[in-house]
Image (cartoon, rainbow, N blue to C red):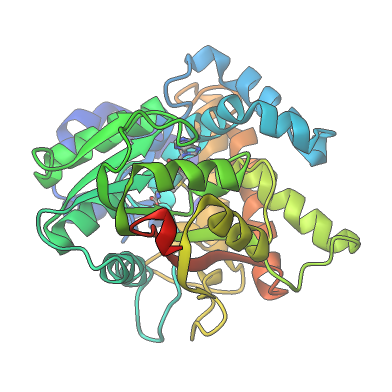
Length: 388
Ligand SMILES: C[S@@+](CC[C@H](N)C(=O)[O-])C[C@H]1O[C@@H](n2cnc3c(N)ncnc32)[C@H](O)[C@@H]1O
């Protein structure tokens, strides 16, 4: 096991060599450091990117107070659902300012789970999950598509290239948009795809603007599903489709069961959620918003490998090493050192702690089948009110 001291040494070496390393292929970097931290990562983000991005657009001196404020919104710290819903913009933006560099470090450019086949890598399953959405929406070259809650645009770039469409990413987090724009330039899709900074509860688009709309693990942040779906309905052209992967509690969730409630609260604090809705509530909200539901299913149910496998401590994988128990243990110590030597802001370890809580809640919720991050639905906006 590499000690904390060798990590410190490594970090100083990284710090000194960062400029020249940026121009060096990642395989060469592996030869130099011989450390598990830098082998076969899911993402291209390195240790220094994690440290420098931590806190997003927040002033680095405000990270600790942002963590404290964020934690207080949640049940584990005495917070209440109504307060989270009333302050959803502040809560969600704080959350993504604090965690985006961790997500990039661990997951890469797409921040979502996927059902998985045997023999398929995590990265392959994530891309396939994105392609599935594009196929369900019947995307055609030239279509104008909206990605609601687009993160740093991993799915947006993949879907745009897969289907030759122009995708607009809607996101309320300024830091993620700045990362997304940078990555769009690198991927050379910046001429056809763009980002808009806005709240998905009040979108700055005219009625009937898009040929298709999708949302991947994002509308769960909405304080009210009906309000969010209604906005999506408004901006979608009549006769066109909306597809999503929703985070939901399943019918197996028992609100009187304390263990179930604890798992739900861990997922909420670890993932910046005001409240996790039941699958039936999302379905009801879709219909109430005016959509006709073409089909819906929890895709977790028949996945050959469980979606939570990458976070399960008993599972080891080289290709998603940073998400494994030892990868997370190393990251935890690395963040401790980074914070100690002030390369990462004060409060960084606390972020790592609530992310760890999230991982535990997600795995437990998945194993007990009380939670799913992939309640899929395909919904259509009728051509006219009389068609409903
Ligand atoms: C788990 S991330 C998923 C990102 C992306 N769909 C992906 O799969 O990579 C959720 C995203 O929803 C965005 N989001 C949350 N609340 C939002 C709101 N009210 N308006 C716009 N975007 C929001 C967050 O900023 C974040 O980018």
